[in-house]
Image (cartoon, rainbow, N blue to C red; front, top):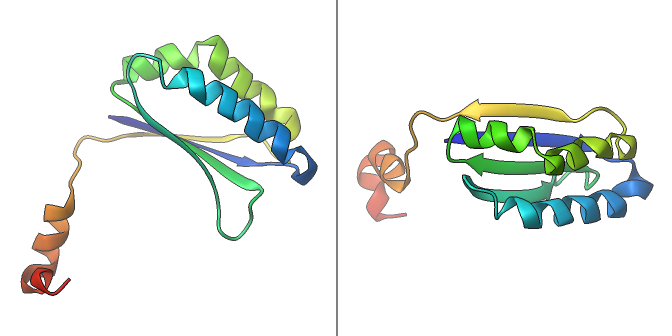
Length: 112
């Protein structure tokens, strides 16, 4: 699995325009082959710091998306930002769930 996190420090008076653009792109993104999930959220401290988080099934799927017109639209939002997009791509080789929490907490899991 590949996780992409795009951090955006939006100009306050441009936030609505940026969010509308991102929402229109995200609607199409969910239909792309290999897109497992996507989320848009802001930080608690500053609602002008937005994060787009997208999970891709494979690097091939992500690379196809990076070449797409849709991703070009996202990159075109740079004029709405205080600084360039900060793009982070993470390759996940292993994922764990609640069992890892139970194992780490040992006997306490029955109390949680």
